[in-house]
Length: 273
Image (cartoon, rainbow, N blue to C red; front, side, top):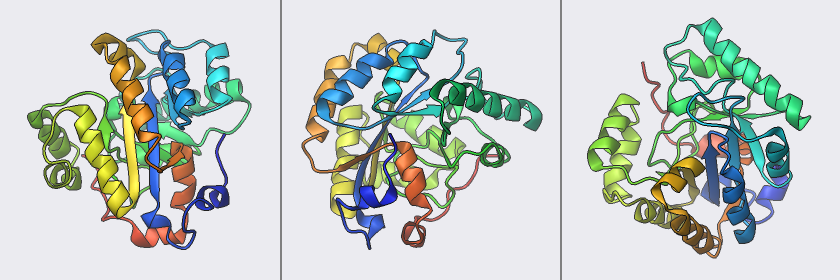
């Protein structure tokens, strides 16, 4: 359940939103193994947003009953109708994917869905506008090495992905996405590390010292293929003891509207062509 703004800020300094230390976890694709991730999160008292498409040509998605069970404790966000990349679609096609996915999920949950995630992190210059017009409050990208509140609420970045990317991949993706701040942060704040656990540890250290958001993305199907459930469990247990405020993506999207956050937001992220 999404907390109210005041409930979120009671645990910190309400007059200094930007220096609060938030922890957010995103679990993408609605895979059938997502309930296993939900169980680990529950054990550690953490929050997360599960982004679920109505269908996925790559792998099965959770059943309606499983989505409802996860929604009892965590936020469920939209991931389009068919989990297809939107950046090469016409505006009409992309709008259909965005709106249909939202309507499908709202029919299941019986409540408004405010959070959106771009399939495979792909979007173009017009996609964020289409997401806003569909009625979403915020949208998450896959732009890495970010711990800040964005200028544009349709372009939220993440700190780390629970997958060890090479330095070449880190830099290549940052340049393609025009995530120049992320590229800089990778070397200055994340020290160029490629192991995902160490990478996220640097995100936590940065937020602990400077405030902001330590935001981890994971895919349960990917964790299973890599055989890294033990590492996920260890990471969840470790971060649960560090005193961060656990929040959903939707909580962050609501907080974004605060003028205090806006005043302290980082330079605006460029949108890929």
